[in-house]
Image 1 (cartoon, helix red, strand yellow):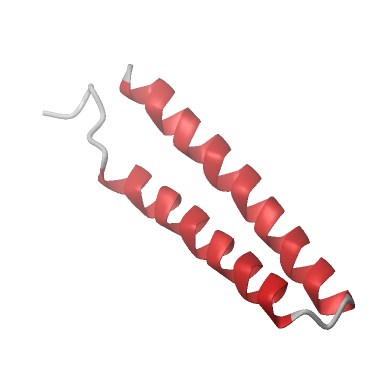
Image 2: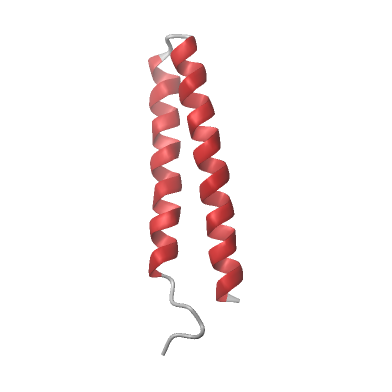
Length: 62
């Protein structure tokens, strides 16, 4: 069960990081500061998902 949670967090983190990068690049092309900052915010949230995954205990650990 916990391994599935790890995989889910990794998937969410990866996809949201890719989306954040795409938003930031698109905002950079349009010289839109709001889009760039939104993309950076999404990247920070995805990083938080990865960090959260580090603190979830595995079933095999005692």
